[in-house]
Image (cartoon, helix red, strand yellow):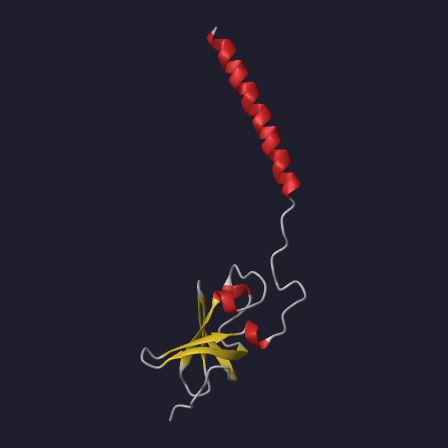
Length: 120
């Protein structure tokens, strides 16, 4: 008999499979739900396998239940407190990019001048 979950429930499950877009978690009632890659951690997740392995026991929050299609959307990060910075990636220092762009433009202008002189 399937356990009745409701949106907002927090349960423990076992990671049953890993894909590029998330992880499948087997719930106590035997059903499997998906933790989308965006719901694994508060920070940037590039590779699910860096955070989870098959067989890991995880605490998940039920986000959505689609009984018609037998799908359950889960979240791991919703069971954890958010870090002070919200888990965002650190911003890049634009000065480095601007310096590289300025160098590129100088080189390009020099090459164009040289090319024009060669034609004469």
